[in-house]
Figure 1: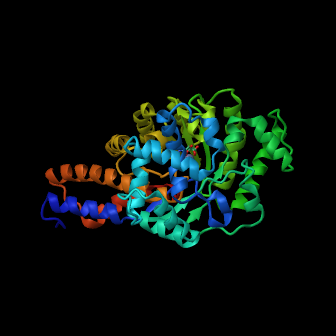
Figure 2: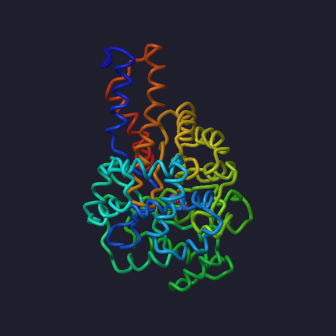
Figure 3: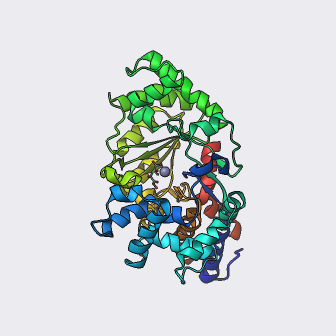
Length: 418
Ligand code: HDL
Ligand code: ZN
């Protein structure tokens, strides 16, 4: 018994399922509206996304320097990106095309290129209903935030009990604990915890207490998260490996929280560009392999930044049931690499990974990041289902819906629950 008379009917059903399946966006930098300016949204934030700032400085005239740029008001910064990246260089990059996609899907006249008129439209929006509209337009059931107790601007909102948002779930971000212990110890000490620059048993215990307390403040975070440099090694006698072993892993075990590791970001290669100044390096998949092997009772969510690491990471995920791969992260979040990674992951893992996350820093980006991902992942699935159909396999409509959902958050939820 089959639901589809031929491969074309099957392909149409796959594309429909991909368009309609709700997505769980498992890593973003969004905030609840109650956290004020931390939640970025609107066309000027879209245009000054750090990906586009980097692209501005690849084409801007020499008199447009980063130092001068950062002194400008946001709207003037956006004007420069609009002029140089969009009008003079054609909006062909993924980050630029994304702004076009978002504005178009919001129903704005991007063909008219009337930035003033577009700004007026955004100025007329109210943030709470607009947030719901964007989540619905992108087809997202909920998104996971990045909540960092080491970022002073974020702490007061949690301390003051600012109301959250049902469709934005917390995640406890802990980079400094692993990659910059002296700074982390200082922050925790200033918050009343007995952490010292030296890494001793007392400091480790106090750091675990700090993280446990913050998990309580956030109220049931989805996971612990950290971005790690390409040089991260485990096991090793490095301070990073020691805090991983003595602070992060015991805390994850005690709170029964997965650890999300995003590995391969080489920070500050051009500090003048701020967030736009980070780059990528080939990381060591063996560190992931050893963590998973040594701690089978801990769940690891892993994404790597270098395209070079992806195949080896896929093979690693075949060996460990406590490892879940997610996303085409950052410099991989481009259609050509999303396609390559999705094909490779499907061929090595089946529908047991999370195809993408948006990493959205600006609310409205959800619209393009997920439209572009649905388009690419949809065609990858059509390709694979056509091959199955040609070989006599007859998937049902329910099975297609199941598999699409698996890639868009279902496998993640199953991994959390198992
Ligand atoms: O560390 C991270 O979570 C990264 O995603 C960085 O925030 C990075 O700047 C980014 O926005 N990537 O998309
Ligand atoms: Zn991120």
